[in-house]
Amino acid sequence: MPGLAHLWPIRFAPTVHARLPGRRGDRFREEAKLKFRAGKTSRDRGHIMRIMQHFVLWHLGITKAWTSRTPAECNCLERYAAGKKRLVEIGCWYGVNTRRLRGVMAPDGVLFGVDPYPPGRLGFSAIRYIAMREVAKVPNGHMRWIRETDAQAARVLRAAGEKPVDFLFIDAVNSYDGLRTTWEAWRPLVAPGGVVVLGDSRASASRPIDNLGSAVYAREVVRQDPDFAVVEAVDTLTVFRRGGA
Image (cartoon, rainbow, N blue to C red):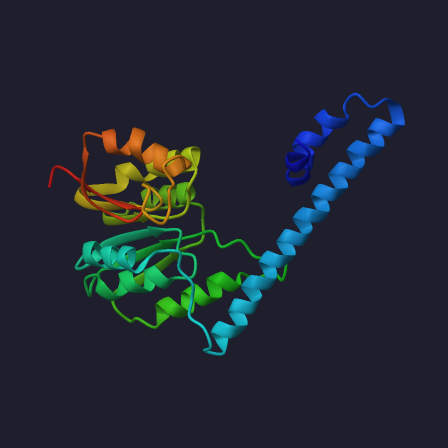
């Protein structure tokens, strides 16, 4: 328990010190909260520093934009996106796969890049800056950025009367409820014969994520959907095709 209290003091400290009387108990609880906040601030600062360091190195041409996808997963995305005309990527991050999708889609196609890209403490998103410039290197087709959450973006497309999409890559969430929200919002927007690729939806040799929320939802819900059939699985990606084409 001491080890857990050190890692998650807000959750466990009130229980550990609940029996301490009066001001002493209050003092221990307040100290636990302060330690938690200090640790969170330290982690936030470290995260910001890593992003800004990568931003500077990328800007100088010393390093490339990051992606969490394996080479096999990136190649899989390209194969199923090739020649598609209406594509959506949910969770573009640094735009690495967004750029690749744009490069292989139909010349008259349109790619919607959905990502809220919240501004950081400096008032802008370094990740968005990199993504937009990476994708702009490929002039193929049309690129439309939607700086909204995935659920809000689905509402935007429906309100605009956009046609159904023939390729959908969901790579923004890895929680059960998060993927449920995304799936329920976007499932109706996939055209008959359209392809859906789910990230973090199955375990691989290098990533044992069977108990990850998104993998559980994909297994319990998406794979059981009678309108969608699994056509391939590559590392942590699962590729589905909608029937009725």
